Length: 232
Image 1 (cartoon, rainbow, N blue to C red):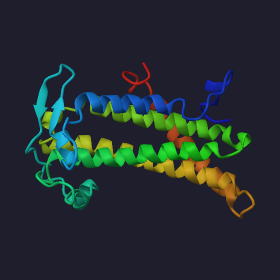
Image 2: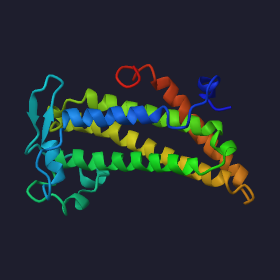
Image 3: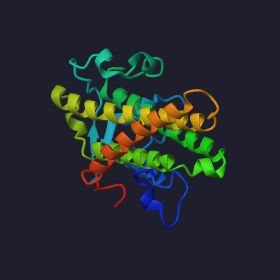
């Protein structure tokens, strides 16, 4: 049985029942604090992240704020070379571009997760009800919630400070990496379940279970720390 299977003992919802509301909450946060500009068309998408709107409705300008020099391109794991092709009118080393790039990476991971949910629907009912899929859904929800809280308490006006930037960046990179690993495990587990006749499949399934269970146990410990916000 999966770590969180007891949560669904009376009525088993579809996988995604936990993560989808958390994803929606994260999208609402972005809409509130970085509202999309009224103008559209060829405008640089990173410009949206040059102004942060606080909970009180006031605006904090991030224009011209640069990513601290101590954070090199290789250290950050953010590919500014990709941004340069779409950032006409804005310095690609601005914090706004860094926010936009990270947002793009997270959006890609969320899209991968939603695509995995669609692929899961193509499996037969018995395979879909494997308890590990519910654990994956729960852990992904926790990661989205953790990201929500990182953003909620981030002092965007201080991102020009090297020490503060490095602290925020390290947390955000860790969340993105966990999402990426979880998506990979999700897809690999579905593949292994549907190819049980291949050699080493049982071993692959057990390895993935161990990896997800380890993430689930850590996520369970983090629940109380991130209880405010999503899920309340």
